Image (cartoon, rainbow, N blue to C red; front, side, top):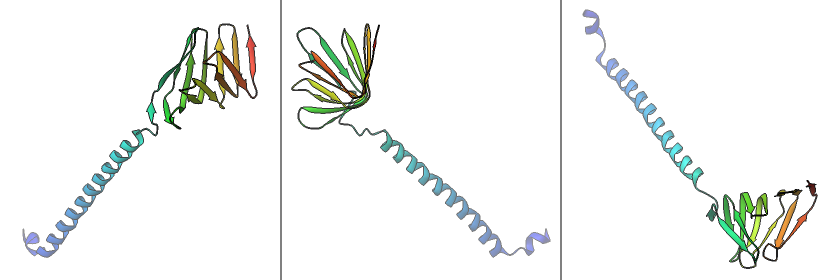
Length: 149
């Protein structure tokens, strides 16, 4: 008991103050880190696209060609840049690529990225394509590889 009476009260006060400040610093630093994580998560989920999961169709007399993508950006009033998993599907064929410029007014589509065309008996891999005349004509560009069954 005499030992506790001989301890300096100022020393106990400063020791308690240091421990309290240490815990407060730890608590506030964790709080700021959590706030940063929430802001980073929110900004990373915001899309950089004008349209998310756009869907369009090219209409001609014979069939419709349905166009889907993960995201799209308006280039001007009529043209839209479609990106990420762009797919063209009709009853006769499908085309898959990464990037396409689609003109809604003229109903044309152009791609300069690697493309894969599939139909019942034909597969064409090319460096790009151009769909025009409302989907009646397709021209493949660049190095192309055709497989006929």
